[in-house]
Amino acid sequence: MTFECSHGSCFPDTTCALGHTNRAECEHWSGESPSATQEQRSSRSEPPESTSDIPWNGYALGTGDLAILGGRGRPAVVGLIGPPDSGKTSLLAYLYMWLLEHGTIANWTFAGSWTLGGWESVVHYSRWTSEPSPSFPPHTSSSGRHPGILHLALRSQATGRLRDVLLTDAPGEWFSQWSRTPDSSASEGARWVIERADALLLLVDTGALSDGKKLPASRRATRDLMEQVGAKTSCRTAVVWTKDDVSTAGTVTKAIETASGEFMPAAQTMRTTVKDPATIEACFEWAVEAAIAKSPMQIEPEPRLSQEPFLALRRSYEKR
Image (cartoon, rainbow, N blue to C red; front, side):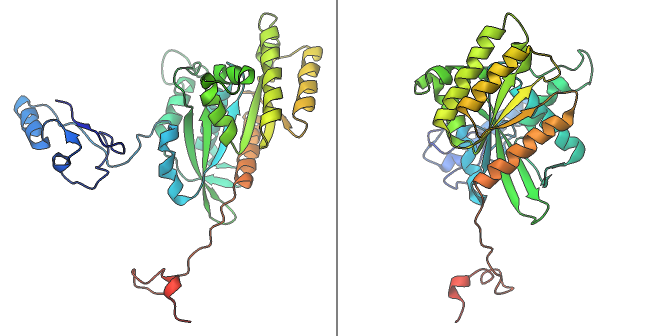
């Protein structure tokens, strides 16, 4: 029988939110007792089901999981937005592979992640392990209403202070829908990213702009998104031309640059290509610095007043 808990803060693979060591003693718990279930499993010679004492599974975080990061300060949020297939997930894959090779980005050292499984899922298709050969990550599914969120813990090389940075991975269809009807319920996921981001990377798909069949729709979607972002956001934004190794007609490039200058005059302009990973690193270097600068942590370290654990940080009771 499957165990279930009716308490809103409990999940099957975590510890009891009310503190019960034996979940069968909790009034919200329903199903067979753990001991009974274990006996049945033993009689069938089946391995016991594994459980976890951590409140996350290592894959991409959902918006409801962000409370676990709040204990050590508000994380900085980098939002990646753009039309479908503009390269958002591919850029995230290159960022992770860059960190695996170099261990640093800008003036920050990689210090861990709560979504290593999510990062590995992103780069899975880019690894050369067996057949088939490596490829770009598949198109991000547009099902669901909330973006996938990948986490990085970065440590300042200058101060040693730790900062949490979140990067969003959401389908381009959400942003195309948001650019047309920003207040509709169908735009909830895109609206979450754009309203909460401390820095935005707005991707321009050079490959689509160079394709005669895709050009009209891609140009219109990019222009609409620029117009809405310029009107509704105040965070620092960069216009990132992806697949820059693909040549595009000068008139098309000029039209997009004109729209960017008209709707987002303060935006940075960057160009990236997988043939030069340093261009992608520079893109995220700007994004991380911009996001952290937007939400600086104002934390005053507590002085240690005693070697005894109980008295060590009781500054308010220090004798004057």
